[in-house]
Every structure is written in C-alpha cells, then in structure tokens.
Length: 175
Image (cartoon, rainbow, N blue to C red):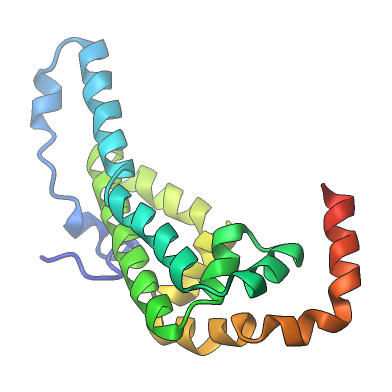
C-alpha cells in the first residue's frame, strides 16, 4: 500500500506501519535500544525541516505584513497571521505540503512508537487548535484553505480599523 494523503487518520495507519521490529528484540543493551528509539523519533521530527524554514521565508516574502500585524494584535500567532494574508496560490501550496509533512512525521513515528501510541497522539493533537484545524479541515478539504482563509486575511486594515484601539489596548494589557 502507498500511504495516501489522509492515511494517518487511523484507518490506513496500520498498513503504513512497515517497520521490521525484529532487530530491536536482538539488541540486548537497553540503553542502546533507547538510543536507537530516540534517534529515530528525532529523525521523524526533523522530516522536511528545510521545507519548514522555506515556508517561513515564503510567508514573509508574499504575505501582507501590515495586515498580519493587525491579526497578531487580534490574537493570532505570527506565522498564522502571515499565512492568512498570503495569496491563495501560496496558501494552497503550503497547506498541501504541510499535510504531507504531518503524515510523514506521524507515519514515521508509528514505526518507532507503535500504532496505538500514534493513535493516542493523533487523538491528543485533534484537541489542539492549529492541529485540530489541520486534521478536520485543511487536510480533509484542501479547498477549505483557499475559500476561508483569504476572507480572514484580505483587507484586514479595513475591517479591523473600527476596533483598532481596542485591539491595541488588549495587546498591551496581555503582555
């Protein structure tokens, strides 16, 4: 089976978990086994790390910084605010690649931690804001990104202006 875009949504996870665990049974030294385990998880975590750096640069290059600053004042994190102001073409490319990266990381992690641990991790991730959106909306319906987010990030200065003073006061009092 080839792991599909949404295979980490529990259904295809067992079929995507292709690691041969027999070698770990033969490693007698528990410290060495733990070292292999931690090294493997670190490799999973670092999948497509260069791509992540590139995305940050792309968001700064193509996002509308002034509008992003207003979205940050309204409570969004820096990257999310910049992402919302990107042209839809860039949003779509980034979202598709982020979903693929997420799947690769979870599939890789399942090879080291096992399917049940990964299912638990996915369940926990589905409760966290940005991850929840990725699982429920962005990766399941790629059109969601280009249909909804431009509405949030377009002409922010225009629709937030009536609330600008309140946003500024809120930000100052929060930090």
